[in-house]
Length: 157
Image (cartoon, rainbow, N blue to C red; front, side):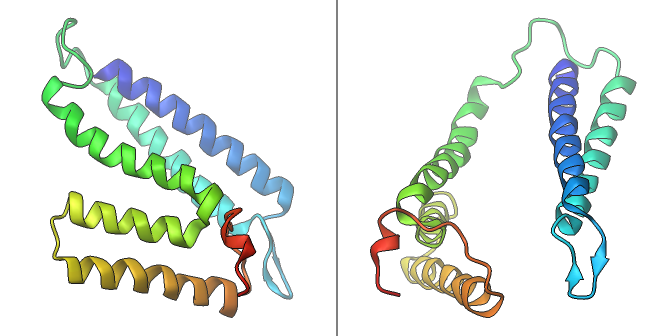
């Protein structure tokens, strides 16, 4: 587990540093109109870098927690991991075709019903209301377009 923590910590640190340097290139300052393009990505990447440094420090401080023959993921933990990964991967894949809002609504519906075992009424209300509210907040109010799918681009609104 220690080696896996170190490997994941290094990968996450590299991603955080890459985003941080790209944010600096975009300008992380504050202008008359508010924060520049790189401001929020820089703050987020700073959190990722600090978190990965903490993970690495904790991993290096541990000495031989698990035996050499133990698997990284125990067999009984594979099913719950796949229950999280498969819907998320499908959402990312479907975003290209049906757009972020519809894909997010489907993701929430599947996850809430399959994993959370919520009632259908709760699932339908939240999986429609949250993407709809996000659409009006980002696309209409803040004028920040989110990814549209190739199928949803053909819609008239």
